[in-house]
Length: 464
Image (cartoon, rainbow, N blue to C red):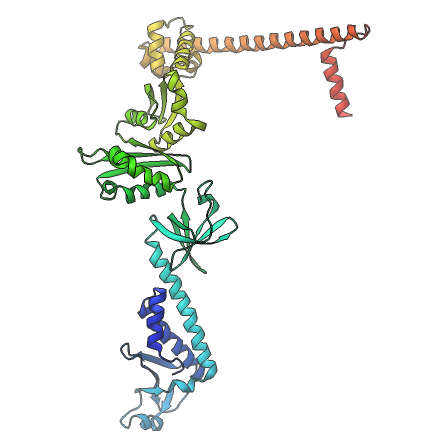
């Protein structure tokens, strides 16, 4: 046989590469069939038998017994058939044992190439099958090399890539360092399986809690949502199916040991663990902790909420660079606008003052309209008559008159604003003209330059 000690080779490759031995045996048979056909002919009917216990291989060339041979690689005459089986008849198919040493160097080389190719394909498939089940899990590896900003990580049977955007800020690794990462994706490509890792994905944090907190891995505590600013801050919302188990306390651990080990893994990333609640207002208040919330105004149609906090908690609720409120938006799924009580009171007063410009709106009605989401005359001018009827409990004609009055007030407000703008512009030009006159007088009494004319001259010079 042109491949010696094939059983030992198959066992070794299967063990080292993690490829099923059946796949290797099938590959070997296909390679031998290919080699035989190169030697005998493309129409040859070849069967390969492999003894898994001994490793012996037998190759049979099947030919049909015919009266007149048309295809020598698949047919033989009755006389030729009697040389192998004296009882054969026309139409029988005879299996002739082939000495594989007769394949020749070219056929053997072809078989070798097929085996190598098939084994590589089998190895790629084995890697993909082994790692596709680890997608969404945490895996350990060793930094092997660097490639244009990416880390190539040795996972044992395969290599994985940690791209720059999936690396934590300010993390530095050197060759040989151990690393833990989240298996972001396993791609099946022509060159083999590509395994993508991440240390910035929110699910990396979720999987770390599953590793560190038994209640999470057992399903007693559920992680409802996770949001991160990698390396800086994260929020995680948790709930418990057991009333005796505090989900926040379970995740924090005794003296904070559980969450602290995760913080260390994430290089000091601050983690806020908040209790999830089916009551969205309560959940938002928890999500914005440690800020204390004074009140919330909910807009369910737009899934938005105005959150009012005391002035001392405004910066805490917003967080550095808006991190706290941004992460709270992510884990709640609601758009949150944080306002101080002082600003909110000012907005309410301005809203009431605006609404009370309407002839049929007093303080009580202004409060009703404000609570219904109509915070100014402009809102009333854009409302529908049906909405005004339902809120103000008036006739349709009265609602239309209110809307029209609001539009007139709004029109007058725009005119007043335009007049104010023009007056400010005129005052600015007067100040500029006075300044130029003063400069001219100090230069010897030359005629002052009109600022408007100067601007026009400058424009003409620029055109020229």
